[in-house]
Image (cartoon, rainbow, N blue to C red; front, side):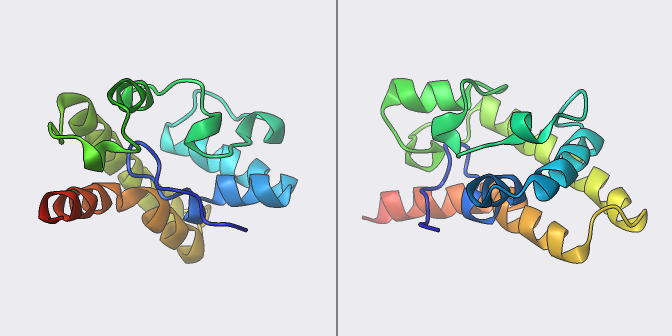
Length: 142
């Protein structure tokens, strides 16, 4: 599987269970991800594996926080290249990630999310703020 770029909001899809399962056509992992996404509050219902498929930012029609649309309008790959980072929308998204992370801690205690799955979520999503800061720092120092 080829590495794809970092998403608009700083997600690293290369570690995302949903993206990896889509590429591998792994229906069972998509089913499991649907339950996890629902339990974290990222979806209002458990989606079907077909509805869970994701090929990264390029396949997402819109972003709840408007981040993809903003990056497209500014002609940048992700928020790390934006001179106004972090904006209010990005801060709201970071806050939502903190809440989702707390939900996953409960799911781990309940045995619904393994330590390996949590590590994948950490690499894919929980580290996005640090990733964008690193990209912004590299942009400023170049």
